[in-house]
Each structure stands twice: as C-alpha cells, then as structure tokens.
Image 1 (cartoon, rainbow, N blue to C red):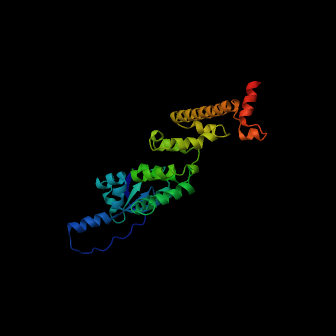
Image 2: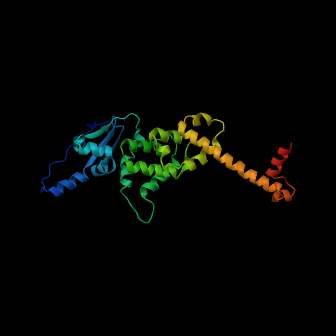
Length: 264
C-alpha cells in the first residue's frame, strides 16, 4: 500500500513568489507537478511527473485523483510504497519506463521497445532485479498496462534467452496468460520439448501448470506421430524400388535399418 511520509532530510520550502493567478496557469502547474515516491524506509526514492503517473498507472491515477496522495506533492513529503517484495533496484526504473514510453518515432523502433529488448536479452534471469520478470511484476502491480504489454511483447520476441522456469513465473504473475491468444505456445513448445527427458529438468517441468504441461505432452505426441508417418512414407517408397541416394552410394539409410528390424 502507499502512504504519505516525510523524508529524513526534508528540503526547506521555497520562498513565496507572487504571480498572476489564472485557471490555465493552475492547470499547467498541476500537470508539471512532481511527486516523490519512496520505497519503504527510503531505500530508494524516485521523483515522477504527476501527469506521467496519472497517464500510465491506474494505481497512481486512482490514488492521486482520489486525493489519497494529495500531500505527496507538498515540499518535503513523499508517497511511501510499503510492499516487501519490491526491490530498490527494480523500483528505480519506474520513472525511466514512463518517460521512455512518451518518446515516439515513426521511422525506427520505439525507444521503450529498444530498451526492453536489451533488458530481455542481457538480464533475462528470474532473480535479476533489473530483469524483465522483476519489471513485469512491478508494472503489473502498479497497473501500468501499456508497459506490461511492452514487456511481454519483447519477452515473446526473445524466447532463446528464457530460463526454463519462465513459464511457471509468467503463470504466477499473470494467471491465464498461457491460454492467451498472444502467448506463442508453438514457439515455447519448440524450445521446451528438446529439453524434456534431460537430467535436472523433470523437477522444473513438474512445476508447470498441469493444463500447460498436458498441452506440451500432447504437442510432443503429435510431433512424434507426424515424424513416424513421415518415416513410414519413406519406407514404403524404399520398398517400392525408390532407394535413397545414400543407399545407391553403398551406405544404409535409416529406412534400410528400419526394414532390417522388421525382417528380424
């Protein structure tokens, strides 16, 4: 939960400056106002524009517009986030992620995607506080839907860097995501199936959601059936007098081996 608190060393308030009052000026001032957000006992503090918080986070929008964090914009005050699971290294990325999503370019990849692709390829471990899974959990908690989508999009594009337990973690963070139409099941299966049966992978695979594991095993069965059908077709052609190039060169092909076993 969030609350308003006072930093250990609160800055002195600025001297009062007289100026002409206008509704437009008040609106602009409100949009440009900055909000200090502290993690627990000021383990990490970020300063964000109020407008960015309201635009990109349903969590902060509800709190700020509902008046819950009204004092957080006052000099020497800060909103306090008390969640124990959120690490300072992850929390410090909050403002940067929001700022990057404001930059657009019609001729090149979005800066937010460019940044997240680097995160997904260079820091894609489950326990890395600067990695995509930690950022995903934070953005999901603060209801930053645009950023959640961007992180998932870049994770799906960098499957080769996934740790084996990534499927379990995604399921825990976003229940139902494995059944989503956007989830690249076939690509994930192609990555996981060769690892099935390897030493040390059974325990990790057993932690997968039962429904997903069942789909994975069915995929393995279907691929095995397709492979067997392909071999049978080659064998039939071989028996009908259409030997393969390797047979003509004096080497036995897999069909020759298969036929030899059938004759035993």
